[in-house]
Length: 80
Image (cartoon, rainbow, N blue to C red; front, top):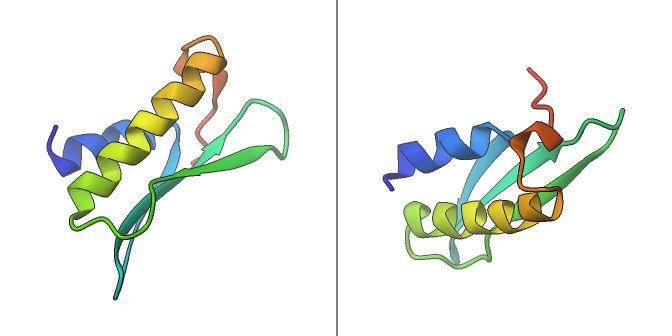
């Protein structure tokens, strides 16, 4: 997947964030669940050499967590 496609997919679950510092790239997403006031953060490791690599790892982690919610993106509600 291209970086743009991964970010669009992550946006289905919340708001993706792309970070870069002197150590490398990291991508995370604040995932909003259907419980009022509840959310959690899923992110890649730090020190990726490209934003695409960081985004791919983040998406893999979101997919693993979503399987724990029954595998449905309906388990989350993205806030505007």
